[in-house]
Length: 291
Image 1 (spheres, rainbow, N blue to C red):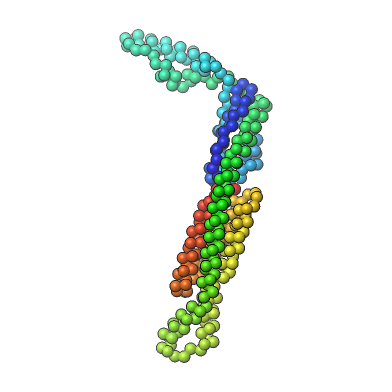
Image 2 (tube, rainbow, N blue to C red):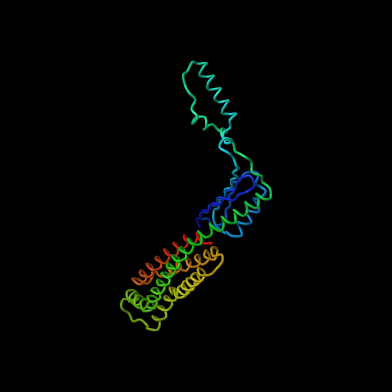
């Protein structure tokens, strides 16, 4: 899930600024951008993040800002050298011009970094406190987003159950349809010869059994109920959601493969199964945002 947080903490000699940003990702992908003097704290930060986050492309930016006055912020030695070079060049080529401080200030290194911040134990405490506070803030944002996504997923799951119930009502008419179509087909082949009713019923029952989708519909409804329960449960959900959605998609595909011989009823079930697959695909897209 997406989120952003920025926290500032005072440390000896200045402040530490922690910026934390996350976007959707199937796993936990961490990227760190920190001053070299803070490298010793990277492992501790990784542990803290993994303790509170299990999914997302996460970027952590850390800056150390030293205390400094406006006078000390400018590299006066470099500025003096630049002004001397400017005046000497203007005099050498007899050019009438005045130096522009706006140009000088854009020269790399013209502004000093200010007082250095010690990367000692106290700075480490401030850094970890800022990381923990940023994690709390970003997770609050992610929780709000997750609740909204879960509510929409639950609505789509309810739609899938409704579609399964409609398919079940149509499925109950399958045997009669097969019996009628088989009788018509056999009549054409036998040119009006008599057909043994018992044999006709057996053939119709056999074809109906091969195209029976009752088990698939039961499993589809069962998986939908499990998905609802999972959305309401605490803890990590992402991997379990992936599994359930994969199973629901498989049942929908099986239903589509079995309903080719039902005529108009089959076309209706096909439309309903395709609608269910569309809902499953939308839930799958949203599940990438859920931990």
